[in-house]
Image 1 (cartoon, rainbow, N blue to C red):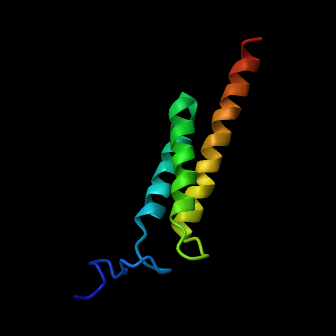
Image 2 (image 1 turned 45 degrees about the vertical axis):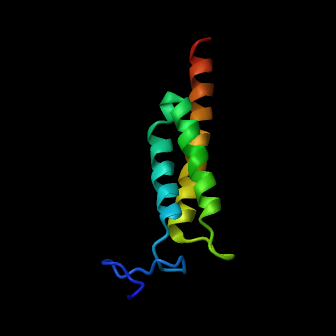
Image 3 (image 1 turned 90 degrees about the vertical axis):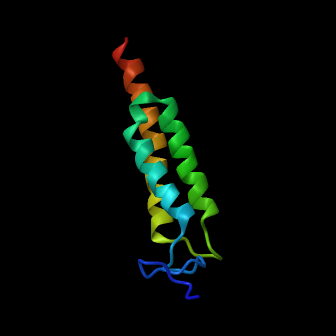
Length: 92
């Protein structure tokens, strides 16, 4: 059987192939940014995005989706802390 799925991407984790952990990292990163105003979910999703991006590395190279997930996860975590600072400053 051919190692390609319907979208023409291989299933073996080589560059240019389907990497489910990288996709999960990207999705978690986006959810982390969206839920950053809720604090805890933003931290959880952002942390999971960073974790999944690190786990998705195949050999030494990180795929584009994993890199995007890493960046969006870090942005989500930073956004949580920015919201916390803004909330604390507005209460004074």
